[in-house]
Image 1 (tube, helix red, strand yellow):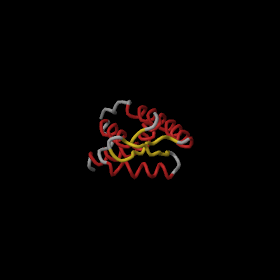
Image 2: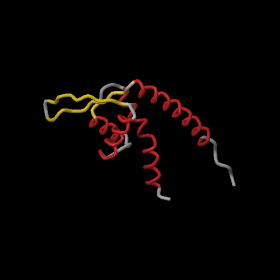
Image 3: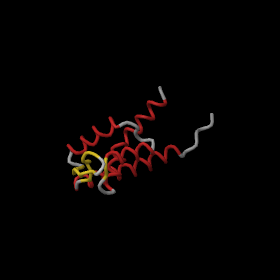
Image 4: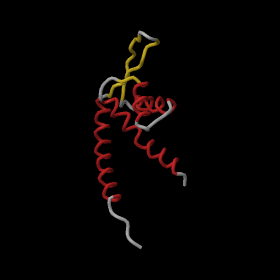
Length: 113
């Protein structure tokens, strides 16, 4: 197995959760999301973010509005819908359970052979 591929898959598995958390803070521009995700080593390409934002919008979890920009074309600013907030709450409960379960397993010392 390839370690890097496994690490990428782990990040992809929680990417949606992280994006919803970022959007939950208030109106956010996709480029700002990308910067934060990249800084956290969660994502490095736009080609991953934009399709995910489209899926979240199509699932009625997020919505966006266009805002005129002084320095270029209008920008899309994303916010969570009420359904998105409920969905994020459910994901947070699952995340907390996963952290607890993972900690229980990984905190045990290895058996001595």
